[in-house]
Image (tube, rainbow, N blue to C red; front, side, top):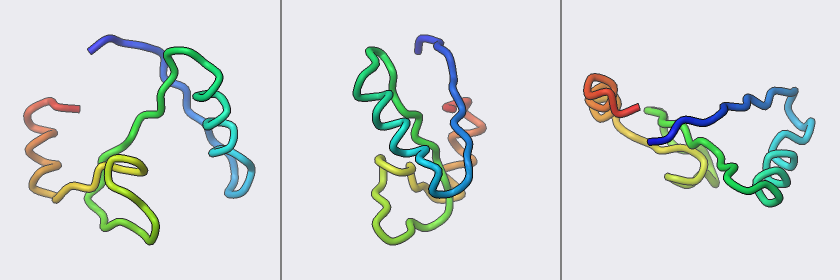
Length: 69
């Protein structure tokens, strides 16, 4: 895996973070969104592999111990 630059976008709820990120990704070459892994259950409307990678706690621990992150 190649290394790049990580940008963290932070703002209060409703400030337009998602709109900003969507516009940047649509208009910038070689820019993608990192999708986090979580052990929690999906909330209404969330999709696996889109909003988060939803995994079991055992899978998460396995991935962590195998340096897969």
